[in-house]
Every structure is written in C-alpha cells, then in structure tokens.
Length: 355
Image 1 (cartoon, helix red, strand yellow):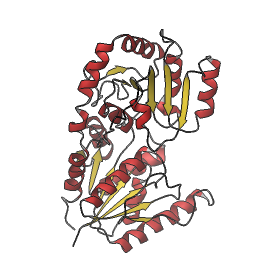
Image 2 (image 1 turned 30 degrees about the horizontal axis):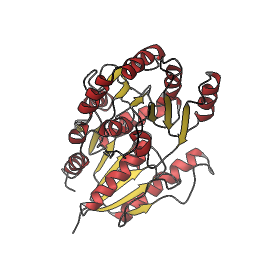
Image 3 (image 1 turned 60 degrees about the vertical axis):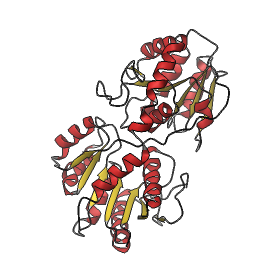
Image 4 (image 1 turned 90 degrees about the vertical axis):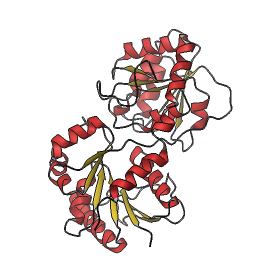
C-alpha cells in the first residue's frame, strides 16, 4: 500500500509557499505516494495540482467572520480533515500557520514536520512568536532552509530535530529569443521585496539604453508605477503582473536582480541562476548568504542601498566578461539544488519517524 502524505499550505494562490508546496506535492505524487493537500484558506487557484492529488479547502472564509472564531473553526477543520485522511505523515508549510496545525493535531499521534519559509531574522508578532516557541517542540521535526536558519530555530525552539533542506530549483529552460538590454526581477510587489530601491537604482544607471522588466503583483504596484513616473523612467519600466510562466521575460534579459530586504531561500533567484543569468542579489542574511558567492556565481549588495546597487549594475552592464563568468558558475545550481535530490531529502526526513 503506498504511503500517504498530507501537505498543509495556504492554498493554491500565487506565492512562494504555495509554489514550493505544490511542486513537492506533484513530485511526491509522480513517485507513487498518495498525496493530499489541505489548504487553510479559500483562495484563487493559481497553481495546478496533478491528477490523483486530493485537494481540501475550508468552506468558510476568513473575511466573513471574526478572526478568533475563524481560528477556532480552522483548528477544528484541520483536526477533522487529518483524521479523515489518516496520513502516514504530515508536512506543513509556513511560520504563521504551522503552530495552529501542530495545536490542531495534538494528541492524535500523527507525525508532523513543519517547514519555515521566511527569513530566519524576521520577527513575527509577539503572539505568533510565542506560539512558535512553545509549539514547535511538539513537532516531530522542523525543516530549515539554510544553516543560518537552523541556528536561529535551535535558539528559539530548543528543538533537537531540525534538518536543513534547501529549496529545490524549478530549473528554467531558456527560450530562443533575442537578448535585450534588459534587467529583470521576479517577486511579489510588497515592501519586503525591495522593488523601490531597484527602481531608484535603475533610474541612476549610466547607460540609458536599458529597460527594467518587473514580474509580479501586489499592494505596492500603484506606488511603484507612480515612482517610475516621478523618476521619468516609466517608458523604460515594464510591469508584467503575476505570470505563471515567465521564461520569456528571463530569457530576453541580460541581468537578474533580487532586491529583497528579507528572504528565506528565494526561488526567483535560484531559478534565474538556473537559466543561467548573471545575478545581483541583496545580502539579505547580512553575511550569511548560502546561495551567492560574491564575485563567483553572482554579486551581493547591501539591502536598501541604492548607491551600491547602482554601482553594481553599472559595472555588470559594462563588463560582458563578468556577466559570462557569473552565468557559467550560476548554472551549478541545477545540480546542487536538483528537484529530485531535494525531494528525496524531504521524503527521507518525513518518513524517518514510524507511527
């Protein structure tokens, strides 16, 4: 009898947690496991689950009821769903919701593994941090995305079973198309993603024959679009919105930039490296970056530093040989973070515990 895996996530809407969890669900399904996905929120269906995967979501919305009543109903919904599905193991994604999933299944005997996705130095509200500190110790195991994240989690939770598993790379295959003098970035248009600083840096680059391509959507979009007008570069900045497939936008660009103020293990960066593209990334873990080796497979700049980003863009635009070197070395991410390799690490960890 195939083993049953229950994945708990926010839903199928666009986002890093949703993308990673859906990709793993599809991979586990292809390996012959019986996979179910339990969504904690009703949402649009942006990502697609493969045939054979059972999908469950609540029939109530968090917008229509008091938040405390919603939490009560959510915990009851999780517990009821888990008992009905009777999984061999549970894999839950997201710092905000993991404590509630742990709480919901307490006393049932089901093994649960939780995966943290945010930057390890990001602070949740007091109640959320308190719940994580108290409840994570009840989890069978914790998955951290980096060694640095593991060290922070050990201090916060005192858990003894924390394993580092990097995000797998959904390798991007390059589309045959002309490469343009274009800089590209991919990510939600929210303050934490730092697009404001990229736009300000782009406005100051010396070579005015370049364009900026922005893939993603979010609450900051109106502000960012207005900022391009204020800086008089709106004719050189393209807002594509949220795209399922952004291979063309990556393939026609010459430089990728991740301007985030905070990250856990950014999918957009490793996907751009897999193309490969020469990448500039903020040093979002402040000296603890485990993806980019500065000057070898990418370039690092301090977060929110417009001057540093402008100078780095100018240098990379002028130095074609450096772009080729960074691209060549970035391509190793395909092997280091190969999807099958990372998926097997997940499977080995979540099935090391027997009920």
